[in-house]
Amino acid sequence: MTAPDRTEPPPPTRRGFIDWLIGLGFTGWFASVAYPVVRYLAPLSSSAGGAVRLSAEDLAKLDRGQFVIVRSGEARVIVLQVDGALRALDARCTHEGCTVQFVPGERVVWCACHNGRFDLEGRVLAGPPPRPLGKWIAAREADGGVVVTRGKA
Amino acid sequence: MSQARRGRVLDWLDERYGLRPLLDFLKHKEVPRGGHSLVWYYLGGTTLFFFTVQIFSGVLLLMYYQPGEATSYESIRYLTTKVPFGWLIRSVHCWSAHLMIVSLVAHMFSTLMLKAYRPPRELTWVSGFLLFAVALGFGFSGYLLPWNELAFFATSVGTDSVKGVPLIGQWLLEVMRGGQDVSINTLYRFFALHVVVLPLSAIAIIGLHLLFIQRQGMAPPMVHQRHATARQGLKFFPDFFLRDLLLWLLCLTALVTLVFLMPYGPRIPGIDWELGKKANPLAPAYPGIKPEWYFLWIYQLLKEFPPHLFGLEGPQVALALVTVLLLTWAVVPWLDRRAAREQPSPAFNDLGVAALLFIGFLTLKAWDIGGLRPGQAGLPDAAASARACAFIALGAGAAVTLLRFVLARHRWFVLSGAALLQVTLHGLAGVGYLAAGAISVALAAVAVAVLRRRTPREAAAP
Image 1 (cartoon, chains in turn green, yellow):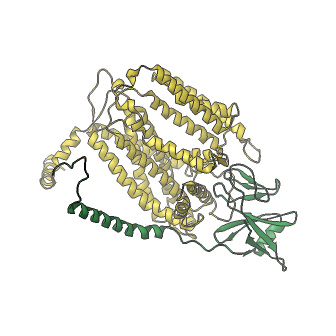
Image 2: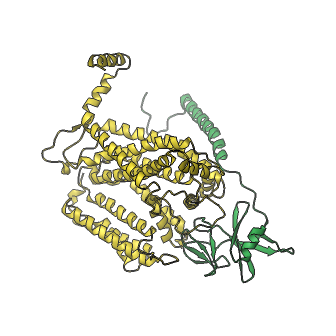
Image 3: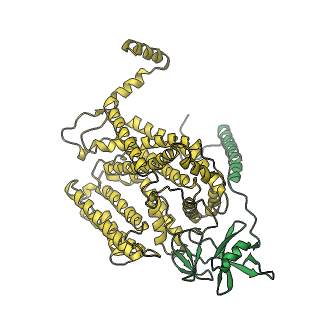
C-alpha cells in the first residue's frame, strides 16, 4: 500500500465504501441489541397516585396526636393534625429522599437523615433540603373519614 | 508421590501442554528488594485473600437467602438464629467485607506513597482504581439485601444522589431502583448486581490487574529510595509465596477472632450488622441512620452543602465535587510527572496525607464525635462536634507531619497543611465548612505557585 497523499483527500474506493457499510451494519446490530435491554431495565411508569382514604387505625393515631404516613401510588404522604386542622405533605424529603416525620413538640416536620426541617406548610426552615415539600389536601368527609388527594402545585 | 513419579507426571503434562516455560518463568519471578519495606508488597495479596473469603462465604449465604418482600429479611433472620453456624457465616462475610476494604485502601495508599504507579504501570493503577469502585459497589448493593430498616434508608439516600447527574439523572435513578422509590424491585436489581454482575467484573478486572503485574513485574523502589547496596530480589517461589501464605493465615486468624468477639460488628454506626427491624417504606427515617463507614465522608459532605450553590442544588454540587476528586485520583499516574522521570515527587506523598485528613475529618464529624452528650436528648451539637473533630484531626495531622519530617525527611506539606487549615478555620474559628475549604484551597494554590517560582527550573526539565 502506498501512503495516502496528504494534500488531497484520497479518492473514494470500493474497499472504503464496503468498510463503511460494514461499520453501519455493526452499529445497527449493536443498537438493535442495546435498545431492548435499555427499555427492559427502565421500569414501567406507575399509575399516578389517586385519592387515598385513611384506615380506622390511621384515624385513631391522628386523634392521639400522632402522624401517619400513607401511600398513594408511588408517593408517600405524611398526614398530621395540629390544633384540630388536618394537614398533608409529601413525606419524601426533597434533599435525599428519606421519609420525614412530625415533631409535635417543635411543630416541625423533620427529616432524620440530614437534619432537614420544614414548617407545617412544607417550607424549608433549616438544613440542606433545596425545595419545599409538595402539598397534599387532607379533607374530612361527611362520614368522619379522611381522604388525601394531591394538592395543586 | 516420589520424585521420579512426579517427574513423569510433569513430563506427561509438559509433552501435551508445554508447561516448562511457565515453570521457568515462575522460578525466576522475583520481588524487588533494596529500598522501602517489603511490607507494602503484601497488601494486594491480603485484599485478594479477603475477596476469596467473600466468594466462599457468599456462596454459603446464597444457600439460604431468598430475595423477596416476605422472605429477604425472614431468611436472614432464620439463617442467623436457626441455621447451625449461620451467624458465623454471615459474620465472616460482613467482617471480611470491611477488612477487604481496609486492606484495599491501605494497598492503594501504599501504591501512592511508593509511586508504584509511575510509567509503565499507569494502567495497573487504573485497574486497581476500578477494583476499588467495584468494592464500593459490592458494599453498597450488599447493604440492602437483608431488607432491614437501616438498609432501606441508607439505600434511599445513596441512590437519591444519582438524580443530580445531568440529563439522564432521573432515568438512571429509576433504572437503579426499578421504580420511583426504593422497593423490593430495587432489592432484586441489587441482588443481581451483588451476586452476578459485580463478582464477574471483579474477577475479570483482578485477572487484568494480575496480568499487568506478571508482565511488568512488581514496581521496584524509586532510584532515590534504593539503598546504595541494592540487594538481589526476593524469589517469589517459594520465599515470597510462603510468606504470603503465612500472612493469609494470620489474616484468617484475625478475621475469626473478630467474628467471635463481635459477631455483629463493633456497634459503631456504619460498622454494625445487627439485623434490627424489617424495612417499612412507610416508617419515617430515624436519627442515627448512617451508611457504611467508607461512605460516611460523602454522607457528611452532603450535609455540609447548603440547599443551593452556584445556581445548582446543593447535593448536585456535592456529587460533582466527589466525582471530580475521584476522577483526579484515577489519573494520578499522569499528573505525577516528576515520578515519571524517577524524581522525588513530594507533592503526591502530601496529596495522600491530605486526602486522609480530609476524609478522616468528615468521617469523624459524621459520627457526631464530641457533639453528643450522654443523657442529652435531641440533635447533636454540630459546632461542638466540629471543634472536637478538629482537635483530633489536628493532633493526628501534627503527629503524622512530625513523623514524616523526622523519619521520612519530607519537606513538602502544602496540601496536608491546607487540609489542616480548613479543619482549624471550620472547627476552631467557626468559619463555614465550604468557606474554610475555599480559603484553604486558594492559599494552597498560591503556595504552590510561589514554590514553583522559587525552585530551580532544572526540576522541570526532562
